[in-house]
Image (cartoon, rainbow, N blue to C red; front, top):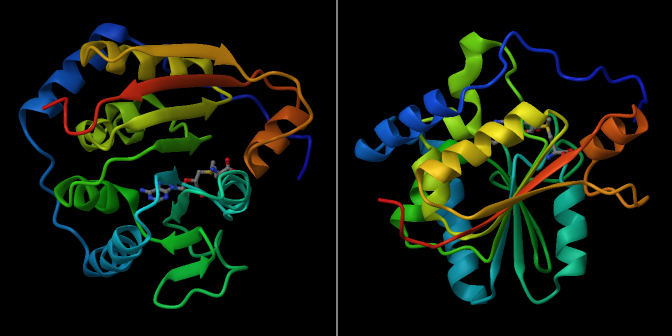
Length: 227
Ligand SMILES: C[S@@+](CC[C@H](N)C(=O)[O-])C[C@H]1O[C@@H](n2cnc3c(N)ncnc32)[C@H](O)[C@@H]1O
């Protein structure tokens, strides 16, 4: 990847109060967008694999080309590691059968996590770990509700539980994510991603090579809570 990525620039500086109001509103009314048929089908396969494996579950949401998911699967051989991305282009190097690629404890799926998270909550999934590496920042103020912490699906993300790790090259994203967690009484920690040569994902490699500061938020979520 290239070392020419520009830092995120935004007309938005962040507002903890606004974020917290939004999250409180979302928690009062479950997100109702209908589930797409293809996501339902993908979920049924994932659910069967999960039920059959009986292994701790690690989810890599927005996994891009799946490189981070492959590394997680190698480093956690006793977990089932599922990477999901809605971009067929990003997953294009894998042979997907009915939108799923599987090898050992690694599963990659072409689907929208907005649907998969809700189906997983309804099916009673309880994650061991959930990573969201370098989510699209949607830096423009008018696109704010597309950021995960400001999206109506956010309460479902919390209900999935597990150790949640979010990485971003935009400190506002991480700061506002932490405000959203505060509104739900969730403990978290913010750290910088250290300068070790290992990178967790292609976007991390690109941002590091471009000299960006990289930020990490870790939270420990209780499954089924946050109603
Ligand atoms: C900036 S890329 C980061 C990719 C990878 N995590 C990395 O660090 O290299 C964000 C990814 O999130 C995916 N994404 C965004 N919204 C999504 C959604 N609703 N469901 C699944 N994937 C989504 C995009 O397709 C894209 O591949």
